[in-house]
Image (cartoon, rainbow, N blue to C red; front, side, top):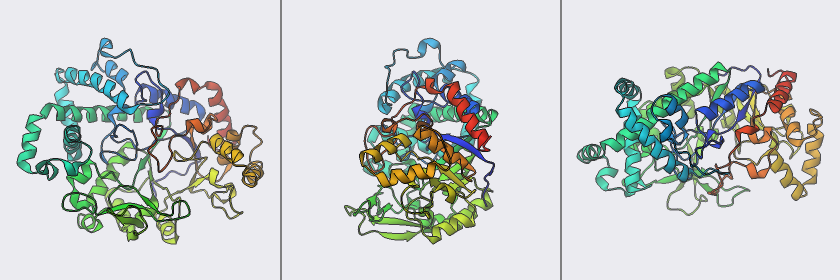
Length: 502
């Protein structure tokens, strides 16, 4: 059953990396508190984030080194000064100004400062107990993640090509590795300790301002991840650890060859024999971090399109069933009511919709999708029921203004005419982005979520991601905190009051 509070409200979608700071990347400390303050002033009571796990130099939140843990790039250095783990003189002050996040450059600089704080931490007589308490709580994953990250630095981003003894986690070799690299491993654990501490502080601060945190569970995880390396029996792998199959999507009108996502499918027989414990641990862990959780690619909890790894594309793939219903029941038994929102977009079928509705998970509507087709379009404002979340767009879409300008350039006059016809029923605002916001707010949906780019009417230059590409601009957009003005907060508060969301 759903653990969702269906009180009418609205929120903002913004990944914390995009909060501009002096350190080249956003954080979960000072910059996040500024955002939370502004959300509170704006009448917003939900902050949606993308996955917050450890990422590589490209910064993709959906390609994490583990299903557990947090991204140390998001640690706030200024808060470490306040905690006595850094001196003011140890902070780097000569950071370059930036318009896009350069994840590798930011991490190289930030890591040096965090190393200094680690040395200070080791010399603090009070540190041993708090560190020990953290290990007792999170030991079921944090040691493995620390080992994996150190090994990745040593041997590269493909664990199947590591020395065989390490690849296969042979006890003697792992003991030798842990002895020889104990300080590097401890540093990685320390980073996770800091992340958890700052995350808990940020969550408490958000709650004090009546802001709920809305997280994201990607259904699949990267092949090069701690979980696949440490628990290969839970995935469809060959003896050498390489993938037997890749998950993806079948051929359709958008891609005649289908999609391959370079992520392994789960070995559901083994998962079932272990009572889905890995998944239970994952959901419990994230449920402690967030108040709401989006289930990415909800279709995959019914069936998954998998293709042979050796194939160049997904044409020869097939649907493979997933025991989502059985697993959700286990979650309810072991965890309780589930704070899930189903990302039910795409080619959903009756079985997918039945699974969603049987567990009373809210679904999603995207206002940008409302203007094609006829009056039966599921994304039309009037076709949006109460138990749904309506978005102007998501992180995978263009901004509203960018979308509008694209349609103008393409001379999509029928779609634009229909857009004006529909929006005029709900809004007399002048600006396109405000028309979208007010229309979404007036729907029956219990929750509206707006990318912050749409709140400020930004164009396509502020788009956060281009799906299916590895463009360096993906995930790198940044927002100057000076944009968070009292004037805009007041306008949003008025809109929320008038639509019963405050």
